[in-house]
Length: 204
Image 1 (cartoon, helix red, strand yellow):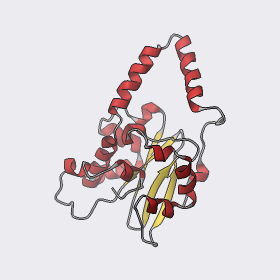
Image 2: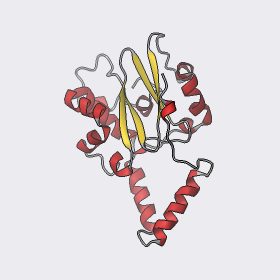
Image 3: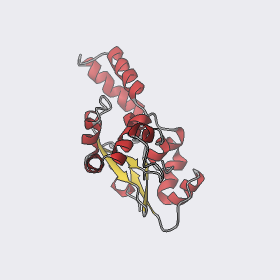
Image 4: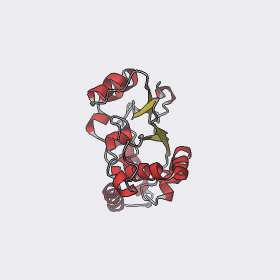
């Protein structure tokens, strides 16, 4: 199952993203709303706090708190705000966070087929393979084969759902809680969750 058909990236994809961003920056600076130095400072602060640990915290809380799990799946932005993960708040960055849950019957994996849209504040800087043309093109067509190349071989009866991120909606996977972790507290559970698990190319 693929959700790539719902992709609604901004138009003019023939123009490099960096060039479009710089033109916007220049307009904002020319209007006297900010400076290059302020933009650089904001970016440094944002990247310092952008980490897969943030996404792992969301997952660990969802594993231990059913009410929070329900909130995370219904309104990812509200769940992020409840844990106080600003300034990486998706709402402030202008996108809707949708969290998709792995079950015994369904495994989810995320991609951005046209560029590399990605909840950076929750997953940290995207890995190079996530941005590669090979991953973006193949995971939609043959997700089972791609996951197997990551070392994740799923039973044939498990359905694989591929979620295509956009400029308006970003996705994060809620992995299944590993068996035998019933006695672990939230902090130790957080340590089990990897960036690959949040993308869906690993179980946790």
